[in-house]
Image 1 (cartoon, rainbow, N blue to C red):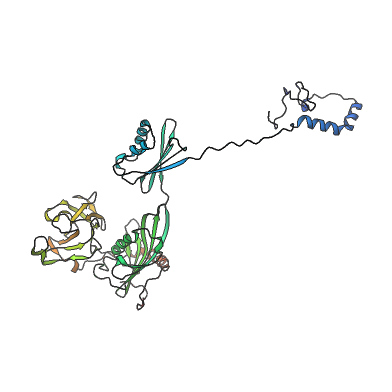
Image 2 (image 1 turned 90 degrees about the horizontal axis):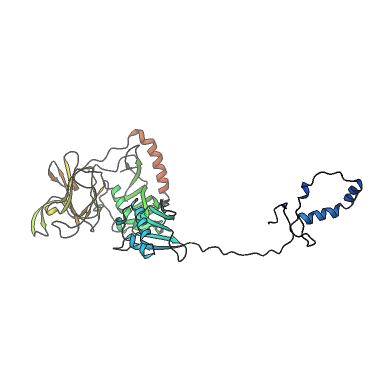
Length: 454
C-alpha cells in the first residue's frame, strides 16, 4: 500500500512495537461517547504524548528508498535511399527488408496519389523504425513540393501528404556587363545564388525588356543592371518560384525601369516608371541568343551547298534551350514537316503566323487547335530536319508573306489604364525603395543619371 493512502479498515500492518494489530477503524470514525472528567483531564495533560502517538499511527513508517533507473528505449533510426536508374519503388522496399505483403500494401497506397511507375531516378525515400528492426514509417518524395508520409497502423498503412515548407526572401543583385548579359560581373547578394540560378534570371530579364532592347545586338560593354527578386525557397535551397519586384537596366546611356503590376483579374505585366507597357504585341525573339543567320533573299545554304532565300531568322542556342511563343495565338501545326524537322506553327491576329523549326521536342499539350499565351514554352531547340547543328529557325508571316521581323515596327501593348494608376504609383515607389538596397554598377568613367522612362 502506498504511504499516501489512508489506512483501511482491514489494515494489519505491524505497529511501532512490532506486534500485529487487528482490524481497526480510523480514529476519525469512532462514535461519540460520554467521557469522565478525570479521563478528560488525563487526556489534556497527556495531549502531547497522545498527539505523538496518533502521528506515529497515521504517518507512514520510514522505509529505505532505492532508486531504480529504467533505460529509455533507443530513438527511432532513419535510413535514406535514392531511386536508381532502372530501379522500382518495390525493389527499394525489398532491399530494406519489407515482406511481399507489406510491399504490395504500400504500393497500393502510393498508387492512390501517383503511379509507382512514374517515379524517376533520384527520388528520395526515408525509412524510419527501431534500430535493427522493420521500418514503421516511410517518407516518399512525390514531387519537389510535397512528400507522402506512410505509417504502419493496425490493419494497414495510413497515409498523408506533407507540403514542403517554403521560405520567402528578397534577393538583391547588380551586374556590370563586359561582353554579354550571361557573363556580367555580379555584385550584391551573390553568395545567396544557387548553382545555375543566375542564368534563369538572364532569360527572365531578357524577356522583360525584349521590346526595348535587342539583347543579341544592343548590349554594350559598360551596360549594367540591378534587380530585386522575391523568391520562394525549399528547405534544400532550391527555388520554387521567383519574380522580379523591380529592375533597372542601363543600356547605351539610358536607364530603363521595369515595375510589375497585375490588373484585377488580369495578367502580370511590366511597366516603366510612367505606367507605359514594356511588353509588345510580339516578343522580339523566341530565345535570348545571338542571331547566326538573318533574313535574306540570297543566302548560301551550308547543307544544300547552294544560294537560296532564307525567309526567317536563325538563333544559335544550345540543344534543349526553351523556345517561347512570341505572341498569344492558336497552334495550327505541331509535328514533323519536311526540312523544318519538328516544328510548331501558331496563328495570331491580323493575319500573322509564326513558325518555330528544327526543334528537338515539342512541349506537352502543344498540338493543332491548342491555345498558347505569349511567352509560353512550346518546345526545345534541336537540329531536326535540314540543319547542321542545334539552332532555332524562326519565321514571321503576314497574310501568307514572309516578313523580316527584325526591321518591323510592331506596336507595344496598351499603357496602364487610368483607374489603376494611383495603386501602381504606390507599388512603384515601394519597389524602387527595395531596389535602392543595391547600387547600379558603373565603370569608372560612367555617370549614371536618374531612372527615366523610355
